[in-house]
Length: 295
Image (cartoon, rainbow, N blue to C red; front, side, top):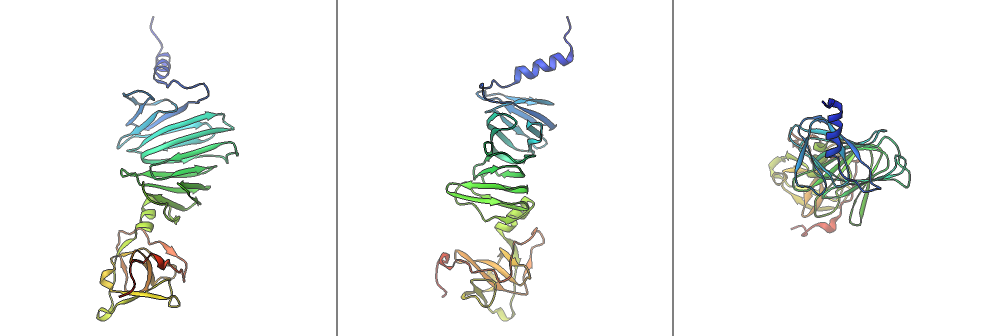
């Protein structure tokens, strides 16, 4: 007797489905573009998924350079989109559509998390990365983990609590945060792309000049009313870490901390997606970070 194609497909899905504990739930995996594999919990062989499948706690989903997938936890729009060159693992999924606990880890690559509704107090949705943990209560946010483990997150809607050790920061829409595997959480900075986030935190290459090689005063804040803490030659400044909204005052690294200089000659590299903006008269910086007094 010949088996119908639909029956064969259903049998294949059941055979490859994970074995779940009684209180654990299963999620659906949809292949958006080919290049998606699943490593079932307690197994060693990767399974290629061409169309759709079922995934559960402990399963790892990975994509290659062209692969893209969506893991749907509940039909109301609680899902995660897995972008190319990403590895993502479900670490906990239990409860009901009304009250649940979902935990997952982004091992490397980029994902987009969507929660279509505000979660009640009994529900938990958390993402862990090598650099930080993220908790949401109804929001849309993106996560990036680099090969080094450096982790970053951007919020599109709602708010996300980023945590690491004893630190915690609330990240609102239009802002992002980053963390190395070792060290503290970064500042929460305005950014809607990861390039903007990196530029805000890493600074932008720049060139400054002054007439007759006159040194620039470095101050604790963006204004002449702030204390002068030293001087620096324009040629020694190769990276700018921020600018005030009205321009001209720039934030620079100075002896282990940050300081501010006034310049009308700053030329920022065209590749920079945008310097981090600070309010006019921002300051003061923390002078206790400086590694040495002014010579």
